Amino acid sequence: MSRPPRIWISSETPTRGEIVRVRAQIVHPMETGFRTLADGLALPMDIVTRFRAFLDDDLLLEWQPETAVSQNPYIEFTFAAFRGGELRMVWTDASGDFAEAVKTLTLAEV
Image 1 (tube, helix red, strand yellow):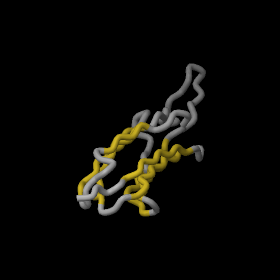
Image 2 (image 1 turned 135 degrees about the vertical axis):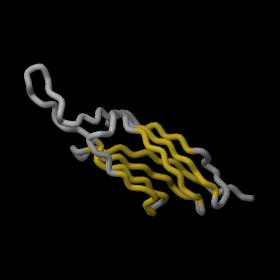
Image 3 (image 1 turned 90 degrees about the horizontal axis):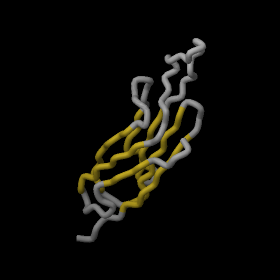
Image 4 (image 1 turned 180 degrees about the horizontal axis):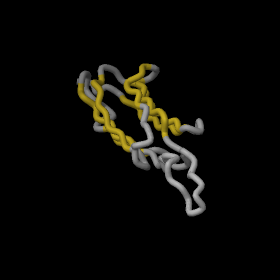
C-alpha cells in the first residue's frame, strides 16, 4: 500500500448532529489467490482484510472485505457528528501492511 488513501468528507466543520458522509478509496491489487500465471502457478492472495474508522478512540465502523471485492476498494459511510475529533481510517491487508488516513472534524459554532 504505497500510495496514500483518497478521502473525501462532506463537511470538516459539521453542526452538532449533522450527518457526515465519508468516501474513501485505497490503491490495492486485491489479488484473490485464485488466478494463475501462464506457467500454472497461482498468484498469491493479497487482499485488504480489515477497514476500521474511528472518531478519536471510538470505533465508528469496521468492515472485513473478502476475495470478491475488486481492486482499489472504495467504501462510503455516514455518521452523526455529535462532537469534533480526529477521524482516522485504517486499512490492513493479509500481509499485515496497513495504510492510514486522518481528517480533523471541528463542530461548527451555531
